[in-house]
Image 1 (cartoon, rainbow, N blue to C red):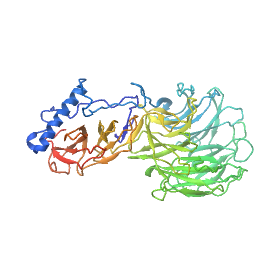
Image 2: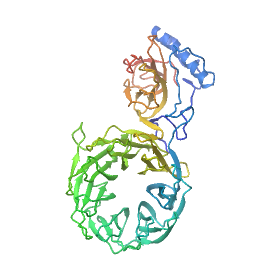
Image 3: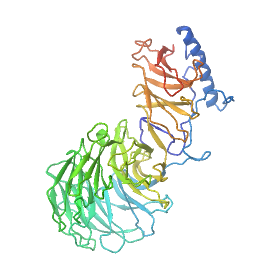
Image 4: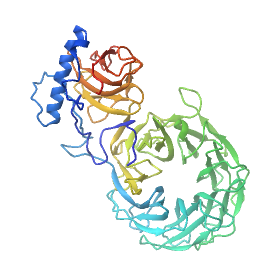
Length: 587
């Protein structure tokens, strides 16, 4: 799994393991030279003695010799917790294979007509391109994927019944190869999970990036809409279907510029009974809507501006008025922008209630924003929610779920861990319990670039059987626990070297946590953290140990490591941090 640089604090690791206990405050020279009492003031000498005791207890605990404590003892550091599981049972996301390398996209359908959802992935890595088809068992697990070789880089898969035999077929967009090889490959389903190749649509396509299915000429036969990045302009090519798995010569609608047009969706945006399309653009920072006339011809494109570069796109009715709306993502700002349909093909952007501008909501973690997006009612309140895969410079392996408020706005995101950076996301009920689940293609899971798929089974209340993740500061390399607000529930504190602060996450007592609050002292770089009651007032405190030197006295201009003491107030907040030298150089 790619490194996330510890920007996300996750309650469970991929296989249900909590972080391993490690000896507290150890260095290569042992504890004896860790702190030098002679360099400390008298109050800090007392603190040093307390800290030495904590270190000794930490070493004993890590060695399997944890001492017994009375019920009145201060909470001791613990590093493992279950997520709504009984005993040592952890309810984690299910990980499946993709049947290939470099998994980039995913689609969901019932390929063998058994009433159970299956998935197909486009795998484009290690100089090989395949489709991986995994048949569902109906309980949230899947059979080993079977593969189909693709001659060029597969990017996107759409499904539908192209020959009217009641069996699900596939259209696969492939690009980044050569003219005549790039195109859309058609595979007709045999109804048992296997497929028969029907040929590839090539000319006049240059670099087809995505494909959608709809009846654009009103003849009752499924057609294709293909987003193509051409030599001089982007365009949508519409291929009328013949009803036998073959397609006629396409017509096209130009998108004007080379705007890195990306994803395409189909809906009836003006309520005239004809299929329309919408396209997200990366460089153009737009959502382009093209209204169909119902006879295979189309109106001029209509532009809806995004606040930053676009990426993912989905359709849903977010305000319950029966008119299709659009939601688009902008990865660079972590933006989720909603456009409410007016029923005439035009849209009203929904501004953020706080900022008064787009994006409508934020789905992001430090260093990563939302890319692909899917829609569903995950908490069964009759309002559509969204699930977004988060990606970015630090490859955050996260799916963000935002509950809908029913007016086009959303509640705060909750984060769920995946095997690797989500590339695409889809929604369905994979275990037949009546609750919507999400499934994401999640890139590589080992050094061989083997692709993966992560499934989050829904509980029907907006939560999932997956490891829930929480945003801390940047590069949180060490965590400790205590009951900082004295409510009988364990809380977490992290030392964040990347952002130079510490994050406190107050526990809810059920394996979940409130959003982090951060405390810091300018010029310090926390590396380790330890908890305890250092001033004897009955309130848990914590100490962070910083990298050598820094920009805070008394370590400024030296190679010594300082420590910062945060005395707790007993309500989850802390007094201003006090900095002192440890007298050591290698903590």
